[in-house]
Image (cartoon, rainbow, N blue to C red):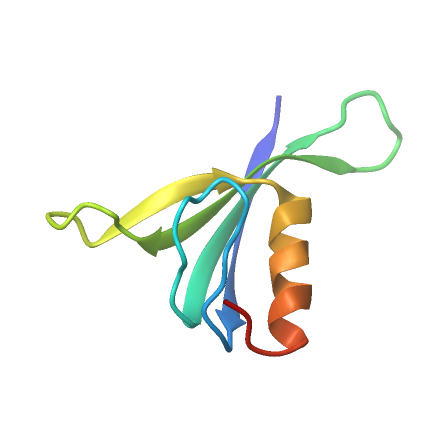
Length: 88
């Protein structure tokens, strides 16, 4: 099975929340990693998303960053809320 990872940086203008992370995250740039696997048996290359992770400041004081698995829809929802203005 062929798997590929895509990395992108997403910027939040306001503090935000994402489902699956139990704390408010500060505004800033965040690295998002998406793993996709190739769909076998097609006559053209096609991939499906199998995982989405985001790098966030660690909750523990002794670590700088942590990778957290999130839903792609939850990430999209957080981006739309951020674009509409500041929220608590």
